Image (cartoon, rainbow, N blue to C red; front, side):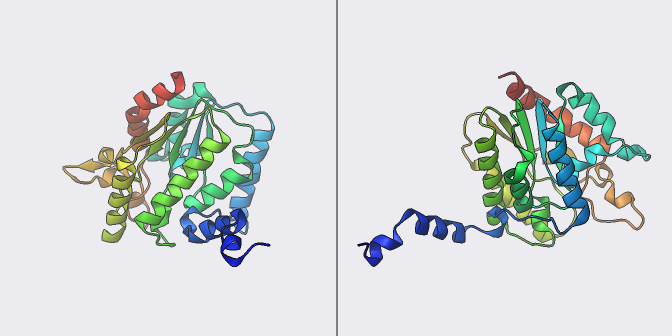
Length: 250
């Protein structure tokens, strides 16, 4: 018969304790109660089930989803950028507007990686952790680590390019969480075929945020800079190309 001490050490109890200790940022949470999100998730599952064989996938939030936009404004010509850099790779866009690390993690565990084995994946997530949910850098790092762990579990042959959280113009608190998150990610020793790259300097000018690299200030009414323009995304695509090529040709 198990005594109390041995009972508390059983695998199920230990697993439950570990799960309870994880922050919400690293816990799968769905947004199925949001109609468009549910419809987009189902559309991506259908695309994958129909036999999608991408050599590259992008996993992220609205910054990634924006690659599907095609104007009419000059700053919104994202599809041309996507086609130029990733069309030959039959790339799959798994970016969902408003997603935090927990929502991406849920999608990954509920079919969006099923049967996929691309040569490379780009992960750009974390900006929304500092929005309404207001999660710390420490929790966000754990969420990003959970995303990478799931990606490696589901796609063991896939190389992963992890991008740092991009700078924005929301608050001093967000700036600090972004800096601390990227600093922590940069200091980690990542597994083989996982590359970390901070591209935040592309969106700075003389050490300050370059508002012209974001479309939010151009909206009516203007909003805080958060989403790069198509031109900003093209600069990012060019900057990550060497690391991405390393993963695609390994």
